[in-house]
Length: 447
Image (cartoon, rainbow, N blue to C red; front, side, top):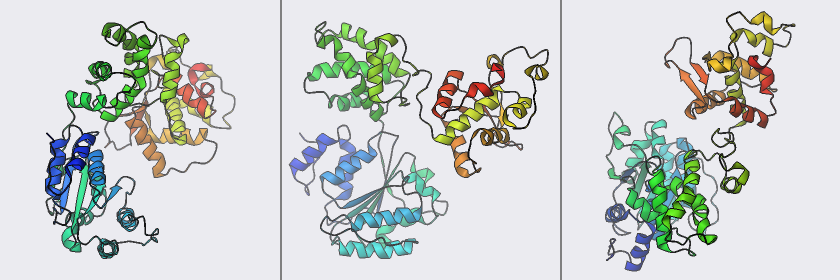
């Protein structure tokens, strides 16, 4: 018996929709109840929240496309200012009909302009008699825009006198959105995380036709047994399932085991799943590189460079920032003049070394350094001039987020933030090679 029922839509369409959104039938049923029929006035605003990879975006896109409801879908991260966001909504609305030619760009500086242009576009697209849906993905970005944007979207149906519903998709709760001055309260709908049973059901839908469903279900069961405690992201699990299935099938392909010989299949796949555990979420290498390394007999015990994060991709200046941070962490402060000043004269290492400095700095570990020293070294090692823009500072923050740098002390220090570089020598040498920088020449321990 189908879980989705609605008098306004054919049973076959609802059955197809149910097959596309497994384990989200209750949420879809609730949305169908709120939407009602096409010509009925719908709820002005809906707030859908839940953790990453809980199906919010996919369910909304699938629901609106399958039922062919008129809508626009906008990502608030890609359109990060109010003007970009409002103009994108109008552009998608004006271009939604394939018969009409691409509309000319119309500037939209204020929300008043948006309301006026939106009403005109609804009439020109002949959408007065049905509900139009505006879906704003990653809606938490609205909090960074002007104070009137979020309250205006919540009351857009009232402001435009049109049958329009605004759907906000977010990973945070509504209480963190609500303005201090108050606003129209949307209908809130929670998308819970997928349980292990839900993940098993969804992942099993992708089984290859050349193998039985039971065989693939056993593989998914093994995969979830290994990864479920550390990773519950559906997209990441789908990637891991596709990446390692060929290795799981090897004993069957070679004729060494049948599909029911779970013990042999487990012994074959176990070491490869342990290696994959080291790189969950990191995407340090592509799928093709992973498969080549899996088949490389010479590297049976280790994946070359994988556990050392040697294949991580960083922006150009982030690489130099990381190199500068490594030099600042492992070189004494008084050696900066020797390495980075052009006319420093001839200074021997013995002149720097005191009696108690016989231990390698690499054995002692990284030392903290101030932001000013990091930038001074950066300007010395980069060939072309780099201005201290917000882009450079944001890349430092990104390196801290990636745990390649760590911040020492509190953010409210009067003398500015201090950092430590947390990467290994092998890692920084691999990064330096990508920008043709010989880091060994600038390390005090290797003089």
